Image (cartoon, rainbow, N blue to C red):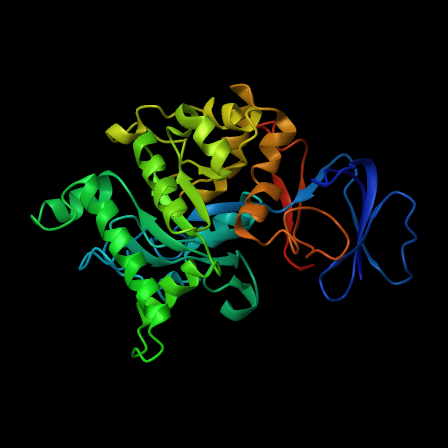
Length: 372
């Protein structure tokens, strides 16, 4: 067993502890969190005196290992730009777990990441969720298929419009997605249809086994995503959501969460005109669940905490900014029963910081995943 003692524990649950104890069992789970906890004989003790102890950060939208930043073509497996509709693709099949980005994640206190195909295609394939370290690929994997990546806006238009093929317009993007979903409905109804890998994954979306994860920056694209999700009764998350603050009533009504970012970049395209670190706080204060994302390597994943720091600087509540890197993304991705906060029964995914992580001078000193 292991025990972390004397640290200021920020649990992301109802109660924090100024000088607390976390007891971790041999299965890598949190046994107890609190103050009056007896430490078993022979337990490995980690003294976190004068330090902050938090859940490992969760980055709800990255391209870790599938879009490697130090390579050109060799490590770029993020976009299959041969057809605009490719639901049969799986991010899991393109990930190099030896990508240096995984080491950077740990340095930045990120212990879990969603990894997605890119946004060139209207339907890009399934995303997965992984721990950022572990003994093997299998041991790191949390969810093999955790959502279907779809994309609205300029990216599919640019890729396929330049070839004078559909989708040339936003209407074309929406039409292709609707056609794909209708084909999935027909596939479900036809008991004698031949097995089709792509339609199998679309069927899982239609049967609420996983959500649509919709790349959408502009307000009109977000509204189209919501419209189609309502039409087909789908679970939906908005990825990026640069103009989400302009349509808060619609987001609240539909109860759609937003994985916001990347924010620590320039306005490199017209869809980023409304980019601001004020936006996460605006959403949070209006009751919309928000996660802060790096979109690694667009922003390096070890800078994840900077998103929270700068969002607080622009008005976001400090505790809510930390939630946007922990329990909020865990809930959005459906993994909150095992991670995202420090509570008995959850994975011991824990980071010890030299001080308050919202102070830019502090850094992650120890990262622990499932007790290791």
